[in-house]
Image 1 (cartoon, rainbow, N blue to C red):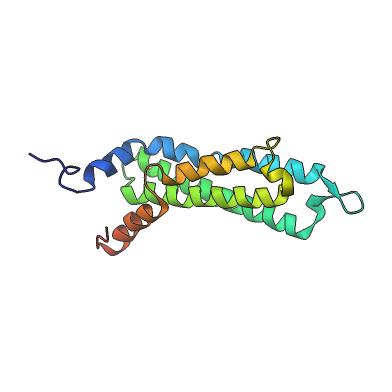
Image 2: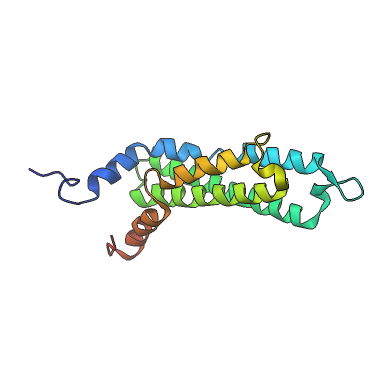
Length: 161
């Protein structure tokens, strides 16, 4: 008897994905530490008449976007965690959380690199290392595109794999 994985089906990989969902959901809660680092840097770094760069509109816009997206991502993970506690979390919920939060974390890392300027690629600040780590997380356990297809199938009822 062939398993789903042997005959090309996605049931086995997706079941594995659900079993590791707790690990992936945990990743969704990690964004606030990096935000504190960016905020501290923007308050500390002085430029143009000894003003902290946090006083600039573009820096504040980036920080506001990041805190909004991190908060939304945390709420998504909280809801999926609640569904999981009730044994109601499906593949599409896990995929939505991973797809959204990894994308958001990468965007936050890119904005952070912008805020830190040249220091964004220096060893003294971990932003570039976090970006590389996030790129591997984006690929591990399903890429952005695969999670998009899982969510699309849930919405339409049509498999597009």
